[in-house]
Image (cartoon, rainbow, N blue to C red):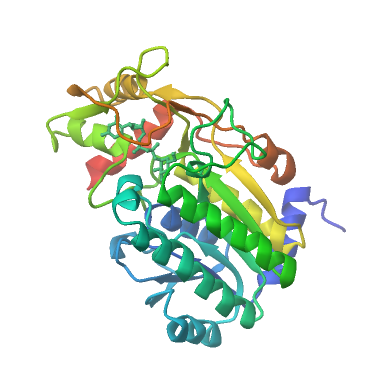
Length: 344
Ligand code: UFG
């Protein structure tokens, strides 16, 4: 009897066959978003090879069941050796520096790490015969948008070296794909937040600069207060509006992109957000409700380079890849991050 498989199941079994016996190389798999992608890959039965220099990645975020090659992606000898030792079906590339103010004060660090090392990785990968690449990109490629929700075809005018470094990689990918057999997906994340609901991974930055973990550290009495960067923006309450997306939903998008590309799908660039914006003050209020704790806030000046409103249209990835977020509610996002904070 022929089993009646859904389209998703057929695609999955087909692409698993494409990857059979081969690894998915996760560059930066010991980082915040990379570790969640590793969880998703392992759950689907993929063999996972993490390549990480553990400079910002954390050993405790490495997932049981994956292999690790510790080293520098930008070292051609090292990365070529990795491709020589492991058969790799696809690369997911999360390894990058991502602190916007640091990118302004030390742009060379960002162009070297985010751009130059990616070129070395791409070259080694293509020489080894691996053709599939998934990039962590960012809403920062848009800069100050003309309107929201932001669609992929809108102008890309990054306002800082971090955003520019990611846009440069996107442009390099397009050029390389025109010249060599490369199939890629670039995923432009809006504000990644939350933690694996099973608490196998979560946000662990040092120093922490992101809003939700900082608020939760205040709730947990690890910090005295959170400073609201700007209360005079042209928004309903004067604070900045962002589109927060659960990290597990981001990880799921990588799996869909992988299935798509391994199944012979074409290259593409996609936004990833929930399409709903929350102001900084609303996030703080929601965190108070979710945690039942006090969160002391201090009003501060604007942080340079912060656009007032960043909200995504994710219609393209929903249409092309069938992506549907499963942890859309801000309460859910904060709840998982809170349980992660308490578990540390
Ligand atoms: N914020 C505060 N106080 C804080 C920290 C943040 O008010 O202590 C505000 C920021 O000004 C911003 C919002 O909270 O309005 C979110 O800030 P995050 O630092 O958490 O995130 P960003 O929106 O600055 O950055 C995210 C990604 C970057 C990416 C950027 C795209 O982390 O990698 O989106 O704009 F570049």
